[in-house]
Image (cartoon, rainbow over all chains, first blue to last red; front, side):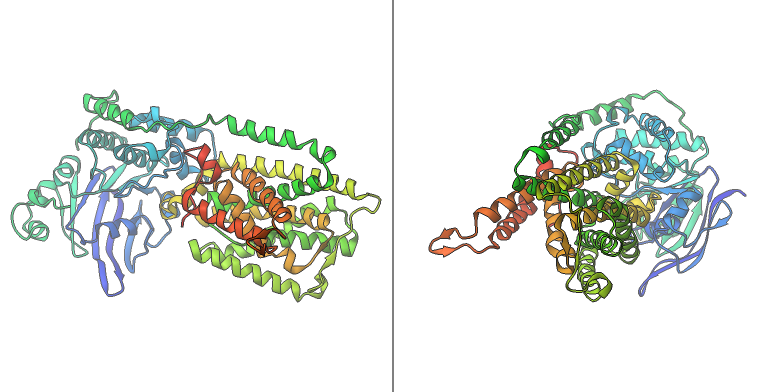
Length: 244
Length: 352
């Protein structure tokens, strides 16, 4: 088994609008895959299907060889799939460390606190252990959300725009820590409009347009694919296609 | 695949960390240890009053303590979980009716009925929870209000529970009114401490964090693997147990229960009022709110009726009118309640 996630013929419609239309791709075990596409191409819906927020109309999602399409988020977390959001969704009224304990509250144990402290240290937030999340900067909230997704030792982390709207220095921390976790075996699927960042980070890129996968493979190959360029801009090189 | 295995912060990370530290807003708030100490002082001051104070004051304090118990229970789901509901009276009524029925049918004393009263409320809460906890926000609140009227109608039409006439509940006959006042003061006092300790433990547990996560962003909590319906149900059940136990004691204290009083919308609204004014999602909120709301209500009830205002005699319901205005003021301007004025980071704002 070489893939941690295999997606086949995924379809999801909302009323008369088909958001995901037969998407198929794979996330290799221990890989970092970028998911790109113009606005409205179905990226976030795909992420929502992969972690159980939405159930697909048809198609298959295999996680570690097991069919998981339509299963609940809770079941997918158990199967090893966690995620972050485009706008960091930390719980503002509780502290940084309490945020990290949320994903593991159904399996009590003192060791979780130690693990949470290690993860805060991992992203340089140790000094904010007991700071309410509302008092963290936007970049820190992104980092907090990232390590919260690591609390359950996931096999794959789905990240929605991890680099959007953060300071370049925080972006560097995020990038370094993703690579570090990846070196330990965690796979990532990263949705981003920051194509230069993705090409530096990812082993492969999947490009969606109008709900379907139009290109996938090596980052340089995908970003120079004429279909990708056309989908993104209608003209010109893909590298200029970062329009948010 | 590119890798970056550095463990020590790089210069850019140091910049990020420095910016991060600088961005933290320092809030001046009272140290956390002050609040448990304040609660302990409140209970220590109250302790001798059951024996020393006049019967009128003991009765008022007993009512306040009753509200502390029920409000602490309500606050678990309503305050921490953000599920505003008007169903508190259902659990109080269930406990009260279970106690009254056991007393009426088998002559059980108050002590023996507390647990069965709690269990009755728990059973009712499980049924209600499964039916309603997939609803969100206002739908849930409205549904619980409807269920309060439904419970009232069912009990009113159940002859075994006394129908519309209700049931008398007999306390030990050997006690005089002063002794009965003391008995129920200390019973409510003990239960109020228990409820407050339960709320404190919940606030500082994973369960409490989960409830606050649900209150703030339920879909995100679900995505993180939180079994939100299960967590909400547990909060409802635990709160109902406290409400049911309080209801059992209340039935004996009042000596007589009937459907309109036991499943009273007034109780349901007062509990919301207590928590909003004291502070939603804080274990100290219901304690403070009960003293303010019930104390104020008693004072207004005694002083206002009959007062002459520009030639008009104030009606008996004026106290409710004033409490309504206070609720509006808190909902608009003091949304985190009294506790929110003292503590910046805890507590949840009421949504208006």
